[in-house]
Length: 186
Figure (cartoon, rainbow, N blue to C red):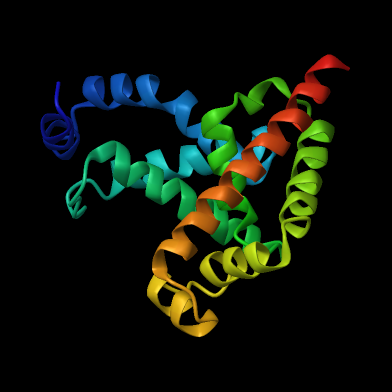
């Protein structure tokens, strides 16, 4: 069944389709939420809230993308809002980088203590980048500069900005792969 059909069936309050969709997507959405929250219970609560919202507001939902994309965006936004309520901010967009890592590596196998180590190491890796690269990464991810604006402000080409960001991602991924490998050994 395609996304539009599922949406239509949920709007018609078809419990069978809703339950099947829930069963098919719940675990992956909890995994996604956990890449932000590092707490299984909170992650499950957020995903359940999203599904309750989906059911209760099914008649008034305006879904412009796929249903899955819509739910991923809702989960991400609710996770970030939850973190704000408990006074955790993500000024360096580390959570987005961490979420990228969890897409490349299965972080479910790690304990909450290991996840704290991973988060701490990710911060250290970003701080350990060469000065110019670190400056470009911070301008892009913290200050939300566009490539053109970074290039203009630093007096470099847009291609240099893109190259530096690609190299930064590669360095972060390589160094985090080592951290993840070491954590799986112990």
